[in-house]
Image 1 (spheres, rainbow, N blue to C red):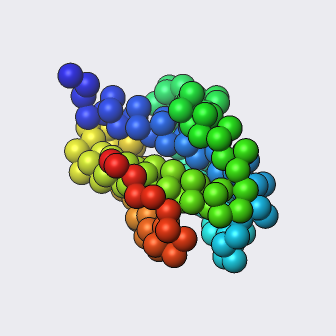
Image 2 (tube, rainbow, N blue to C red):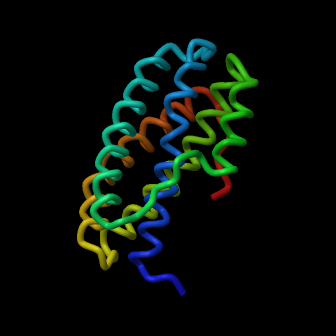
Length: 152
């Protein structure tokens, strides 16, 4: 069984992979039919960039090597989204972001209350409110555009 610290580190590294997709997907946003898309995408990009910068500092301090590229699953999602446009893009992207942020909120809440590593715990605790805010925004978007709810 993995320790809380190891699981926390793995999830934080996974979050980095996920966040890597924000910028490329934002370039697709003009294809979106959602009027507030650019503002929302810019907020995600800004927040993810700030969290990634902080995560890099924590990882460096702990001698943790973060992934340099997205996971296979995240790359497949990016490739799928790159082929879509309009309402089809909106629904697929929002559905993916809903699933991703639900997982992140659960995991960061767990790590923030149980991690044995003080720096990892502090990062998760600091990042959690932003993730919850993103989740709320994505839930609202999901309702407004009729995106499928994830199964997780």
